[in-house]
Image (cartoon, rainbow, N blue to C red):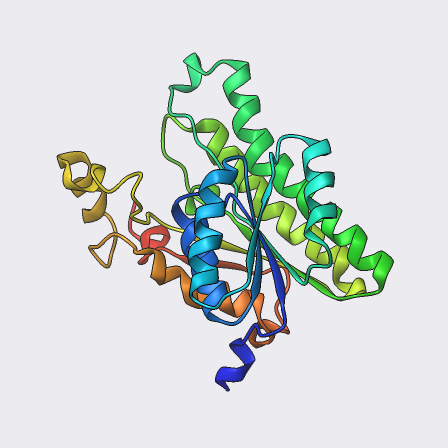
Length: 251
């Protein structure tokens, strides 16, 4: 049964691979046997990660990618070569009250989190269809696409849009043997937010999670490998929530 989760011989593109969950996802996929194409704007950071993976006997290469640029996406997909799986992980957030949110900030978040994921998925799918090959897209959404908090209106909207986009593409592309699914992480501790969880505000948030703990990156491994591998062969249009029960807590 464990062989169904193997990614031996699979080539995976991971966007936003220079930090946080992107780095962890790269290591998890490499550990399952995949060869990797890691993409981000900060090429120097992913080059270091690729070198580290290569020293461990894994195959990984770095390419530049700005998901807000159609030209950059087209060039990155061309450079990546034939792919089997795309993990749409690139994302940003800007914290400001909705009344004070400049249009430029709204556009930046939505362009990265939603439009960018759409263009990368579409570009990969066009190649799969042209080559008559199956493919897999895993979109990294968020529980904030299912529930909301204040001060991050464009993030909430973009992740909700990404969830619905996942379902729409799954419906359209199933006949091409392309599976499209999404992971909705809850609050996950990374190097970017680890200090916050030690503050009173962070502790109050943790108290609202039924498991009474913050998530760790490795808590997402099961969902990622399920959706990226043959273990999830009969899944498309699925949205897998990994949040310690946060979205089912009481109001």
